[in-house]
Length: 168
Image 1 (tube, one colour):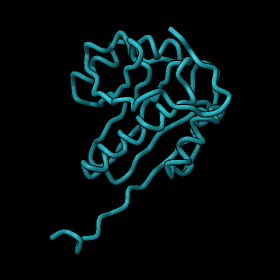
Image 2 (cartoon, one colour; image 1 turned 60 degrees about the horizontal axis):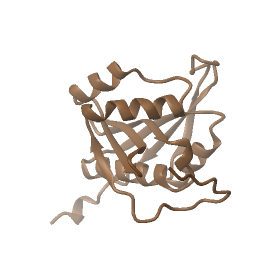
Image 3 (cartoon, rainbow, N blue to C red; image 1 turned 45 degrees about the vertical axis):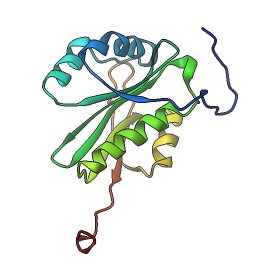
Image 4 (cartoon, rainbow, N blue to C red; image 1 turned 180 degrees about the horizontal axis):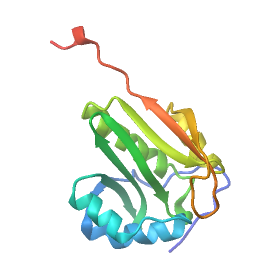
């Protein structure tokens, strides 16, 4: 497999396709978890969340494997982004932005009012992505991450409310 070490953002050839993932994709999701995160979800957590319908996972497959995914929930009008992961060899190609945009569009279409997420204080690339989408920093969770007691920043995005008179 050929990889690229882009010094600037680049795109994969062709438009990546987003796909809804299910229990049969968990091995690939777990591999991305291992490559991307120090604190990881377990296989059982993913399977239970999918089986109970507690969240959804959208992924991008390229070059023979899962290259990126986003896991999110939508409960009572409130969306939560739980994880966004991109394979280290495929970062800075717009996959995370594509997935976040797709997840936001899905939830907006299902009448979400707000979206929340937490991010490590040190994860500047993710913070920049969230701000690009209009998320605002609304709070901190002190000593949130168990591997190093790093703080989490809490971000929120408010979806525009449709005008009542606009519906015919």
